[in-house]
Image (cartoon, rainbow over the protein chains, first blue to last red):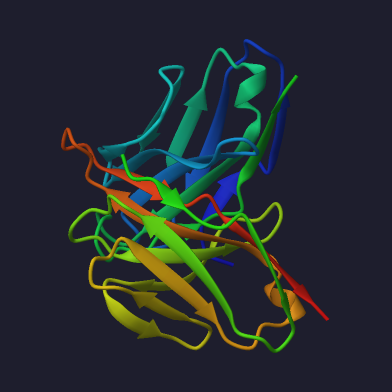
Length: 115
Length: 113
């Protein structure tokens, strides 16, 4: 158990809908990262927040957005969902602002299925 | 943008040493290289991290050459429970100053009895 929690574990929804994925980092960690894992794209970095501020941005679609709240939990919002958004979404957390030596610890993931 | 490539799959027998290489041609100058293990439908699990030369912990060793354009994860005496997918993770500072995290393509290791 990494100490990172994600809810829900599974999510099934329809195209065009909007969903919110939630992540609670390990105690003491200030950074939260979001990744998408699909069969054809592998593990793709989406976005990182550090102490409430956006720190790094990857291949995140405009339909997706994220934020980190004062209590350091984070939410990933996915809107206008398409079939291709079906994937495993992982949250990770690290102690500091990332880069260099900061180790990321991953949660169990949320499996999103868009029908 | 960094391209991090790994062999797609490897087979090994129990008790053997396994070496998995990751090529990362555009790693950010000051970044460490991190390796993860992933079982089906689970999050990646941290194995080892290093910057250069050799790092060893209780489960693996990591070899990084001077140019840091590749790294090799070494798993000594694998067992059936080591059957998993292994990923490297590096940072890429990018040409425009944007910073991203890049996972390798993943190596599916199958350990045979």
